[in-house]
Length: 574
Image 1 (spheres, rainbow, N blue to C red):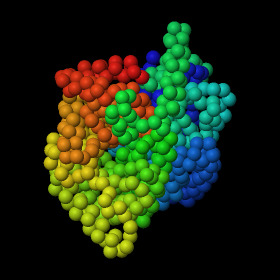
Image 2 (cartoon, one colour):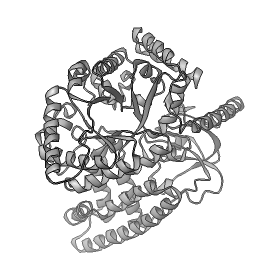
Image 3 (cartoon, one colour):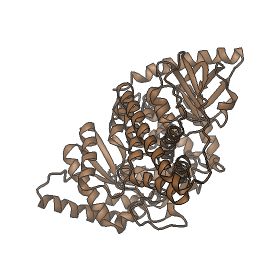
Image 4 (cartoon, helix red, strand yellow):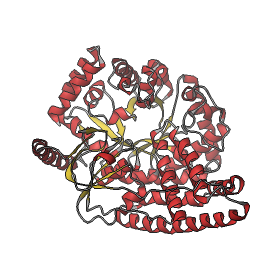
């Protein structure tokens, strides 16, 4: 049995197909001045071939996987067309007198390391994009065949070190039962693709590609993050039953799509929303029954470019989401940059503790020109749907007051220009700093709503870096300190006649659902694929049952006791 990361739920049993890949040998010898022009030519020819290949893959993905998945390859083509990236490779060839393949390897590795050093999981996975494109370029420079999954003839479980977007886009999805990879995390392309195709996946297995052979019988348990290679007969029989039970469970979840997040007794209804990063994520949100967007991460508009996005560019993106979701609400978070997310075109300082430094609302208040441009775009989009604004990284009331004064300036300008907008749109904050949770009663006077960002709130409260594998066991959402802070925020908002949502990963964690429901959380916002399971838990409970569970959890002293209680409870009602 191998333990990895549960990336996409489900159980599958089948024969392994191990994606080996052709070995690449890079010539690291120096070249002469007279060879430079030929190496530049090799590079340029490889770029042309790579673009042609990616255009074909994009076209196939558009037809078979949908527009949003095809956009991955549009991004890959943009990498090949990026003058900064390509010029840097050419410069290396000329100045360092190295081969084209060596220059691509060195420059791309620099970008991969830059993304890998980021603490944001979504951005970290951008390294896979650069790795995929550069590997294709190098293979085309060397004339190495590019192996694909298009030629699989039998139903198979794909085993690999890692799967690139190109791999998954070219596969025959009727033949792929599941994925199991050495590398990857919950937000890797393999995980995202598996969830969108609704096939099981376990990633981060370290050495599954060495332990399995093509033809081996493999069990992939995407619910628990477990893979069995050549299991014994008893394990096989046990998993055949578990697989059938899970199929029945998923059919039951699909029937809930258009039903509300209402408790069994009809006493309490909560809003179940989706977190999105781009307009293309709306389709997945609606397909999973999202009643709104609880977090629209706008920073992705600012990345992979050489300058700040204009008001018009932002307005177009926000308007697209507002119209697509209308009349459902969308909460647009203002720019949350800094920490691990830096923009090359902004002069951002190197800091000892960037996560506690000049980031998010702090940076925006020091650069009101950036904030006002964004607020104008959001206000304009509010005319086309049910839009709300949310400020991140708030730790005191003065920040809200200052941000709102810039918002008022933007409103006055739009009125003077005769541009319509919703003058009564709600304004809230993310509660992700412990101080904000503690003084929630004070902050409630300045806002219309709270949204608890548990990812940062937990790591700041427990002083645990959530990306540090050495102390990952200490990162516990069900820690009594975290639960008490969440309760304090909800109670303060309700006392002030306001509402509280949650947009961190905890909102999609079914073991936390009964407690959060019992504490009075008004809105749960999560990855779209998590909505059906959370909805089922909510609809399985009466509000009194949820309140009793929350009260019991708050009286418990040890995090592991709370988690054990909740895991056992969820197992009974799933």
